[in-house]
Length: 293
Image (cartoon, rainbow, N blue to C red):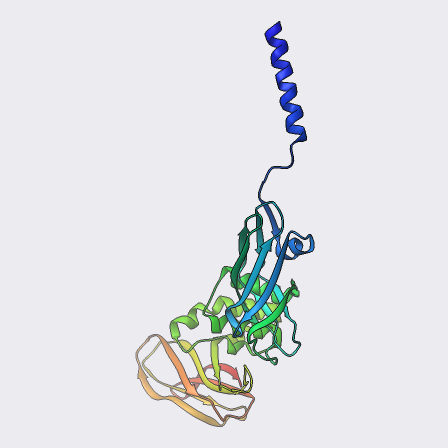
């Protein structure tokens, strides 16, 4: 009986001690905006020079006594303090473990989302911003899970933010173009664009005065076709009034088979408007694809 009473007393003392102890140093998880607003961390955001890739430095200090994981979300838009400088859209989610009292520097992956503004210089100041609108948030979330080359991701962001043509998201490399179909479909859905224009890519002239010149330089695309009989095939590029401006193939003999023809040509100096790539077998048009400059 005495032993039982002693055990009960011991358990009661342990309960009292545990009830009066402060919270244990357990890990907290917060997004960066909430963490700043609650005074858990302080942060300084600055440009590293350039408008894409790991172009942002985040200096973060944990002000609390608790180890904390801070999330910078894909889809967060960092606001430039200079209104003439582009904001940055983060496209790669980053969890940052910051121990109690620790200061840490990390790089953030993002891209400019105001094509007509200046590229951020080194040391350019940003605030932590906010989650972007639904369209930019959607493309950021997609790129977070489906990364591409940096120039492709930048052009994808500008399609959404600045209504750049879908054809600006492309590559001169045939294998890479095949990988872009899913990205084109996502962009077309976000911006309610016809997918007819996603079969080709355009590159644009470099302009030292601005980030995107909007002046088409070269056309790249792939045409898949089949012929069922021995025949001659021609492929042309025509303008909107039917004038042939380029002949890619002229009366080339074909055996029955499936074929893929790669379009590669300069379009610098062409008038703006719609053009048509047309395929003929024995002088009869069998296929037509549209491009827009």
